Image (cartoon, rainbow, N blue to C red; front, side, top):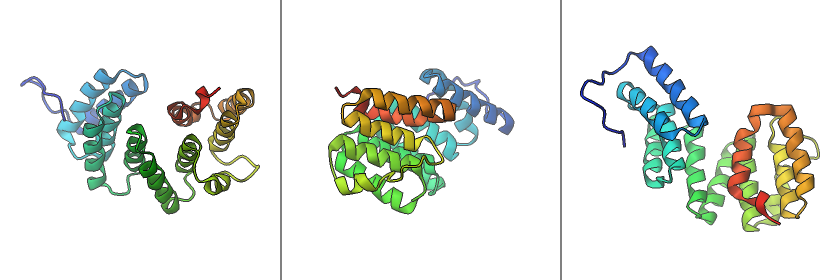
Length: 202
């Protein structure tokens, strides 16, 4: 999994590892995946079992389309920290990326039962159900309130429903409001919406 490094590549102290992890995350956010992986290699030399580093490595590999390798990373992260949410979420996301729709829906439904207040999981489940046109009863229960919730999820859920009805203008208005209120917090929700491709429907 870990790229080979020159013999003279010395393992950095803990503080340097923290800085390298931050650099890796920053590069990942900029979609500079090779640079992110190089910074991450420095971290994993020092902390090979660090769940955050392993999860980030899995996320990079996922973006590169290396799903099997990514799953190994997520599994290793969860072995070290079984309740580490980012890795648990990413395992479910891999199922969707592999087009294993029923498994992905079941995974997120079960995760939502375990984490009923997690609006990102709820949103992901709604996207999957809308995308696959399944379980209308469950769809109706998700974000059933007319009042916005504590995250951008309600706005994005409303937008996703509008897209499925062909009302892109209405969807755009909700997304704009969410961006104005929540700023960068909308990034993960927008990424999930783009991945669902509901916003590409005519």
